[in-house]
Length: 519
Image (tube, rainbow, N blue to C red; front, side, top):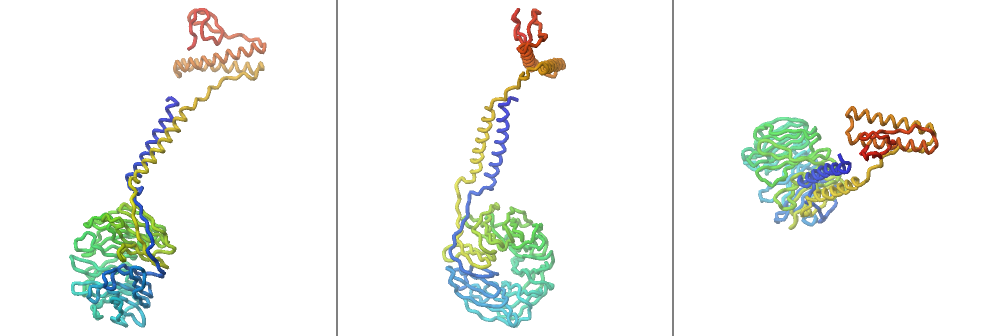
């Protein structure tokens, strides 16, 4: 192959590779044409948040911010000013309309001289019941059964106690001896039940009388949530295990619909409407080592949509439709203080880091604006998240690919224009008799080798003639060097193949008949 063509062949291969990679980045969504950012509306110190919710707790039609630590709960207005707050020992809280006034109340399950339950309605606390015979408070939920609302308490020894809104005991149950780790309302054919899970992996669904619809067990539990993912009136029970098990159960009968291993302890599970299709819901799970996964459930089973990662244990997940396109983005916080927004295709957009681990994240309207509220270990921060779309930005990789391709072509042209190295010629710098004799023998041996290769058909006619011409010229130079130094030498001659005339070695043309000897 012509040496000038080779650089362009190599350049063509490289250009194809560059443009293929550019196309993958441009059309796969790896390069985001979108950008999310945030500005801080306000912040205030708060330590050790365990629960947080943007919700109306005063009945004025405007959402407030509820936040709770182990020994303190506070309700703040849209500007972060305290509306009311109370202190309790070792408390667990939930929100629900216990009084029936269509305003959410705060239910406080706490330990003092004994375990007690308080109801805070529109900022006014009252004791519902005290000196309960339960162990350390672990979980509390308000379940709106068909027969009426009940407050279900779970303790550190696996016991359940259900109270009516009047404080009277409705039923008790026991799910082993391990701490109640999760409680949530669950729908079965349109009817409301309560789903319960313990730390050791025991699961059960109870009705309003404390009768178990079904029970089961799995590996040690980290998280349990219930969502009606496909809107059929029956919830799915989603669990995350200590050793990476991620499972989805049918709340009606406990049958396993989907399972996989995420390779790390599952630290959080939330429902996030990523694709904007209300007929099927998506689940975002977070891991102890920072892994983030999204799954889509079609009513029969689930499939993984994408996976991503943060730097440390995922502590909280929330959904927000930042760009008002009908699709939620997943807001994910971790134990190192990082907060990121993941889009439908798994593209990660980082929000400003916090100085300590993320405790809670919630999304809601405070005043007239929708905010992302982040509580780390030391502070509450209310953020206005903004979205910008850069028109045509996704095609940037193609532009970069074209620029790189042009550079490759320029380099190929430069390489092709470099002249070849000149052929080496035999030098006769050493003019001693011994040196000239040695050179003469070497040249004759080379001529004999060329003749042998020609006869064997191992070289083309053109290559043979070119090489023979060069060697005969070198041999003529050698004889000239002998003559110049005054050494006696038998002059090499050749015969013209046309007329038979005797000619000196090195002549290209017969001086008698004009026959060209070598071309």
